[in-house]
Each structure stands twice: as structure tokens, then as C-alpha cells.
Amino acid sequence: MQQPIATDLRVIAACLKILTDIEREADQCADICDILTIGELNTNSLAITHVVQMLEAAHGMFRRAMDVFLSRDVEAAQAVCESDDIVDGMFSKIILEVCGIITQNPQNVMREVDLLFISKYIERMGDHATNIAEWVIYMETGVHPDLNTKEM
Image (tube, rainbow, N blue to C red; front, side, top):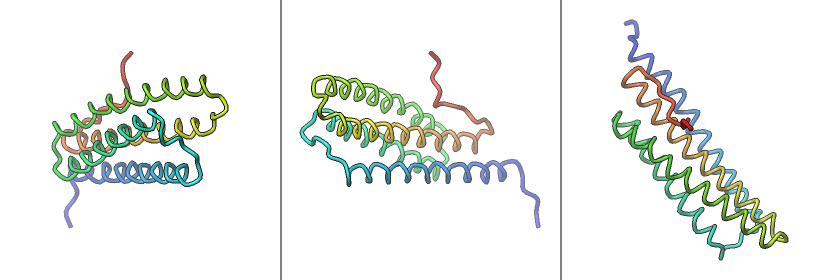
């Protein structure tokens, strides 16, 4: 019976966008599971250890992004966005490690490529957590920052 105000419309728009990011996050998890099911990763690789650390960091980002969504804490949302630099740094490190492994052992290139795909999916998961935090900032301030882009 009452007309929505700007805040209501921002919440609706943000929720629709956040839902898309959550769904994409789930898709990336499923893609990682597919690789783990059919792939042949070298479980003794140092790069695997770094991928697990990267996954834990991205998972923490996502958990904090969901907490921020519930609390609508703009400062905490900005902290989530800033932590994406950690995940991106880990991604770059893993790419270099895997390229070194491929150079030394070209016969195992396929399992290393699987590791690259997993790393990329995890990096995107961090980006989706950042997107969720950005939408929380939009809900609360009316300004939608793009904190995924880095100025070079």
C-alpha cells in the first residue's frame, strides 16, 4: 500500500545482484569439485599447499562478505574488498610456481593445468566476495564502488 523509497529499491537491486554472485560462487565450487573428481593432482606438490591456503583465504572472504550482508557494516565491507589483494597475490604466486613445475616436468602438464584452473576459480571466488561487499556498500551509501579494478 506504500510506495517504496530509494533505500528499499537499492536493497532489492543489491539483493538480486548478490544472489547472482552467490550462484556464481557455487558454480566455481562445483567446477573445482569436478576437477578434483576426475583430475590427477600431485598431492605432494608445494603448489597444492599454496592453493589450499588461497582457498581458505577466499572462503574467509566469502564468509565475511555474507556477514557484512547481514550486518550492513560498510567498514567491514571495505575490509573484505581489501583482502582480495591477498587472494590475487596468492594467485600470481601459484601461476609462477606452476609454470616452473611445467618447465621442469613437461610430461605432467595436464595435472598442472588442472591446478591452474582450480587457482583461477578460487581467484574468481574472491572477486565474487568483493562484489557482494560492494553491493552492501551500495545498499548503505547509494554509491556503488568498483573495488575489483586496480589502478596500474
